Each structure stands twice: as structure tokens, then as C-alpha cells.
Amino acid sequence: MAEFAVWAPVPERVRLDVDGTRYDMDRADDGWWRAEVSAAPDARYGFVLDEDETVLPDPRSPRQPDGVHERSQLWRPDPSAWTDTGWAGRSIEGQVIYELHVGTFTPQGTFDAAIEKLDYLVDLGVDFVELMPVNAFGGTHGWGYDGVLWYAVHEPYGGPDGLVRLIGACHARGLGVLIDAVFNHLGPSGNYLPRFGSYLSSGSNPWGESINISGPDADEVRRYIIDCALRWMRDFRADGLRLDAVHALVDTTAIHILEELSAETDALAEELGRPLSLIAESDLNDPRLITPRDRGGYGMTAQWDDDIHHAIHAAVSGERQGYYGDFGSLQALATTLKNGYFHAGTYSSFRHRRHGRPLDTSTIPATRLLAYTLTHDQVGNRAIGDRPSQNLTTGQLAVKAALVLGSPYTAMLFMGEEWASSSPFQFFSSHPEPELARATAEGRKREFADHGWDADEIPDPQDPETFLRSKLDWEEVERGDHARLLRLYRQLIALRDNHSDFADPWLDNLRIEYDEARRWIVMHRGAFAVACNLGTEAVDVPLTGEVVLAWDEPTADAKATRLPGHSFAIVRT
Image 1 (cartoon, helix red, strand yellow):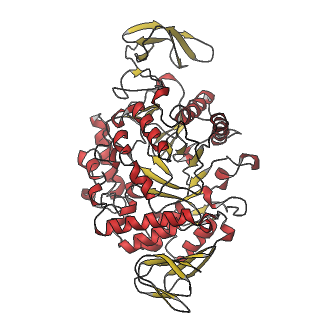
Image 2 (image 1 turned 180 degrees about the horizontal axis):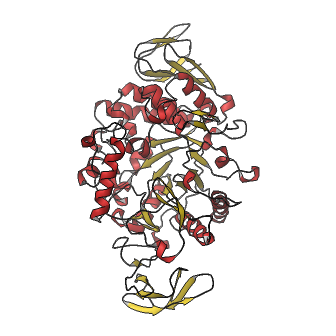
Image 3 (image 1 turned 120 degrees about the horizontal axis):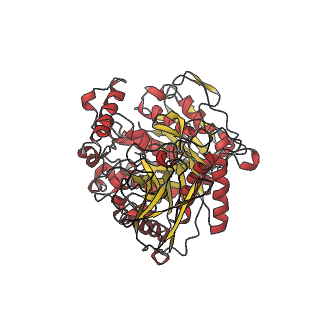
């Protein structure tokens, strides 16, 4: 016998359908319906609400073998499938994370194909793999942020069994695994949750209707979110989550849902006997996210730091449009690297108001902030999905890498960055509904046309070629400058791992010098100095010592180290 349950306070009647046979369910006062019936371990099932004869998938579906519009399937992880019994886990703080999209990481676009590349990642030196969303979403391919059945694993990637194999293979190689989880909105294709209960609020965010986490019936919705988060870490043995756009979680209760999730994650970590990490993506520059709960914070392990990205990218590339407007100077770069945030209660010209709050660098280590030169957002949300490698010199890419990997922050790479992949990462979708497909394509063109782009240049997200263009070309890894940059990334990560000076997490110990006019900047990390020339002409940096790693050939005398244009040197002083 199997027990089936669903929270559905909206309908007056709920029937359970198991492999075509229907059963009445009993309703409790809390809005939960239950039935205990005989069912095979892999039975297909769903729920029939009121008099509509359509069989809807389970909101907590463990598997969707035929897509998000069809019946769910019973699934439980097979204990014998796990090969990582010796995995003790690790915290993400101070580590190197590698963000990837399963569908475009390999030609096949599956979990099993990704396993074949894990030895490459180990050789690169990264510590964690961060998977862009793998929850069930409409269509065969997409970014994954339009998920509608958060508990299920996207079948074209390999379903839940494929994810088990990938995580087990990562752990066997000493790699931790993070999963990108989206709890701030639901996708437009296959979203049946409002027919069951009050999952949505009256508000909205840029991606759709907001989730009800503080209105009537919010307790069950909050439980739905937290149970889903814990499932990834308990049932699939993920080592943590990246929480998408938490600033869009509108919570007016006294205990914010992030604080509640943090407490339950810590409890699960204690139960499992291994560290679990929560990384928040936030646009707020609010230190409360990464402040411990006993000091009035939410207790997140870390957060993405877009200010660091903006400061590095604008200074190196010269781009100043949109949110890069306040960045670009070496002063802005130095301020951001030294303080964690650039906007810390200061005026943001992009937002036309004050933004952020200062970070207490004496109590919050830099390792609670993620630094990166690239993310899926910073490429895919450009009109044509172009990478920095398509616009910058290899030397400029090397400088960006040195600033991130030589910094005291937890570092993150985006797939292919380490060899200057020439493949774009464009926004792609495969909505099966013609009207939704057309609206997505037209909306994308309209959005960027408003910002001055030629609408004809903007890729159609629904065109399969947009998806195929975004796949990494692994054949270029060992060619020319691609191979040279890859070697540099390996050397930078090894240097970071092998010298304790680079592990110092306290920004109060970080000293920065720069010359705005001559375009050089130096980060002092204990006995080492990371010196970068962002200009095109060679410059003399007042720094002497042993050069331990460099891009191009620096020269030194008793007073200075000369750096060629678009280059860096790490000097043991």
C-alpha cells in the first residue's frame, strides 16, 4: 500500500488517479487530502479536481517522465545507486565554484555526459560544481528558471536517476555539488499550482506573479518551499543551494523565510554529519543575508556579489551602459575589492536612489561573498548573449581572472570562461504552446530594442539554433590562446590553493594601491602582490620581488616591475 497526499484547499473534491484507476480522497481540516491505495513502486498518478476530468501532476511530484503537463510517477532514490559513502562534505567558503548549464555543457546535454567532463574539472582545480536549475520545466530545453514542478528533475537531462549518478560521481572525485533553486516565481507552462491552493500572492516581479509566503495560507506554501530545498540536499545529497533572486521573496513576517530555511538547513547538516551551504543571489547589498542568525541576520553561507563583477568588468572592458554607469574607474574597483560592496548606502545612478548598506568587514569574512568575472546572467542577459571573450583581448581576460582568483573572496567561474570559449550563451526556450512561444520571442526583441539594439540581431529564444549555438565547443580547448588561458586558470587556482596568504578571508588585511591615470592596480595578499595593468601601454609599478606567475613577460629592476599592456604579475615581495 502507498499513501498519497496533496495540499488542496481550493477544490471541493479531489480524486486520486493511479495508473487509470480513480479513488476518492479524504479531506482534513488543514486542507490536505489523503488516500492509501495499492500502487506499484513506479506507478503513474495524478489528481482530479472537482468535476474537471483532467489528471493534474502532483505539486510535490518526485518524477515527471512525460513532461510537466502529464501524470507524475512514484520515485525514491535507490540506496545502492550511491557511490559516495566516503564523502564528508565541505563548506563553500573560500573555495572555487564552477557554474554550468547541463544542457549546453556537453553536446549531449545530459547528466551522464557531464560525468565524462568531471576529470577535466578536477584537473582545473575547482572545488564545487554549481548546476543551473534542474527542476522540471516546460519544453525540452531552457535555462531552467521557468520551473513549475520544483521537486522533480528535468527528464531530458536524465531525470532523478541521472542526477543521482552525477552527484555520486562528483563526490567520488572530491567535488561538491550545488543546485540552483528558484523559489521566487513559477514558469508559465505547466503551472497548475493555483488550482490546488494559494501558492501565488497578489504581487508580481519581473518574471511573473510572486509566491505567497506571508499572506493567508502562507504557512503551507513556505513548507512547500523549505521541504523542496531540503529534498535536494537530503534525497539527492547536494552540498547546498544557490537561491535565485531572493530579493523577489516578499516576506512581511517576523521570521523571514530565508532565516527559517537557514535554521532547517543547519539542522539537516547536523543530522547528516556534513556541511551544507546556502548561497543567495540578491540585488540588495544587504549584509543581513550573510550575518549569522544569532546576530540578527538570516544566516546564509554566502551571496553573489554583482558589485565585484561590475567593478572588474567595467574597469577592464570600458563598458559604461546601464548598471555599469557608476563603475569603470580604478577608484571604484579598489573601493569594491576593499569593502565588498561598492553601493553601501551610496547613490546609484542606475536606480536613481541610495542603495545598499555597509558590510562590517571586521566580523564578516570576504569568503561569504562570491566574486566572478562571468555568470549565466552577465552573458545570457546581454542582447546577443556575447561573452567577454568575444569582445576583449586574451590579456584583458587574464587580468580579470587574476583579480578574481587573487582576491580574498570565494571565487566562481562560468563554464568555458577558463579557456575563453567562443560560444555565446544566449537566452533560449522551448515552450510547446505556440502563443507562449511567440510572446517570449516578441518580448525579448521588444525589451532590447527599447535599449537601442537592432531587433533583427536579437536571437529568437524559440529557434533551436539559439540553443545549439550556446553549447560549448570542447574541440577548441587545446588550441592556441584558448589552451594558454586554460593553463593560466589552472596555475591561478593552484597558487590560491597552495599558499596560505591567499586564504586570508579578512578584508581589513587587504591593502590596495592604484594609479588611475596609468591604469594599474595592486592587491597585497600577505607576502604576495597581484599587480594588474588595465591599460594598453606598458607601465612601471612600484613593486619589487620574485615574479611567481604572470601574463606576458614583466621586467623588474630595483625600484619597479614593468608590466606590458593588458597583463598582470603576481610578485612575492
